Image 1 (cartoon, helix red, strand yellow):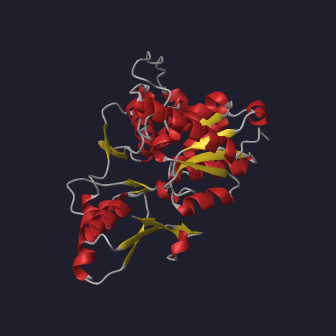
Image 2: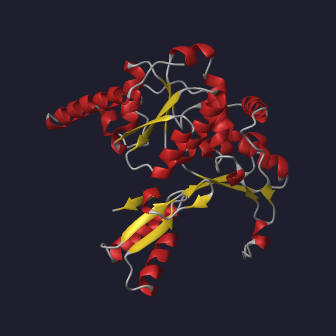
Image 3: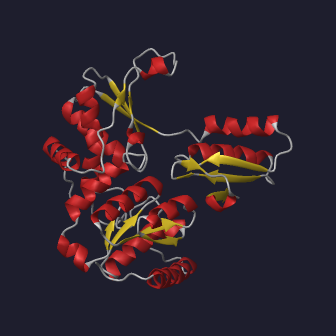
Length: 331
């Protein structure tokens, strides 16, 4: 199924692009999009006219909800009501938590991936084109699971710094992995899509993806009738966009806030306390999680004692492993 997409093709393509970028930088003649961060879509440039905007409707979200309800990969996760009581939090409000961590891949991304595959992929596309996922961790795990469940042969581009366990998990699901330097990942994906006619799925700027995430908003409003404020993680933007759209379409008066960790400050203190309490420490092992905890602890440890080795670990089949062969070292 699909064309053969060899690692050598990707590496050769990247090396050629790297030489072109280096030459352009030396000549001070480089396109806007090549300066983009790993989270900037390479198809967009400051000089190009913006594409026409298609607004998502409530009917779109309900259609996607019906679609993913038929999938065995997506669960309607429960809402932990009055969580402030169970967590012993002194809050001036009632706190309810939507437990998307109970999805099969541990995150909401499975909703978006199921919607993308069902919306975009036809037998003709699968037969003629190689499907490629471009992302990290949660999305790429969802991409791999949906691909495996459908029996598709797919590939993914991942950053050079991707966690070893994430790469292994994706490969166990039959998805081939190619790593590229972080700063060029999306640029490489765009070039491969254009020159090799690959069908690339991105974890952003895709209404099928966003409407999949929007189903979380539908379920929240359905289960919590009297809601005043919805707080959503920003991430790459698609999840926030989807949940906010669904909530505002159903209840325009509800306030929606996007939140992110503030430089891992809270987690930074954990690293400071470790070094303060354990003077002679050689190695610190930290759970990867979504990255903020690992980043905060690693920053504190390295600032205080640069010689200490820090390893980020992830679960292997639900069991945390602490051998260096299953860890990513933080330099």
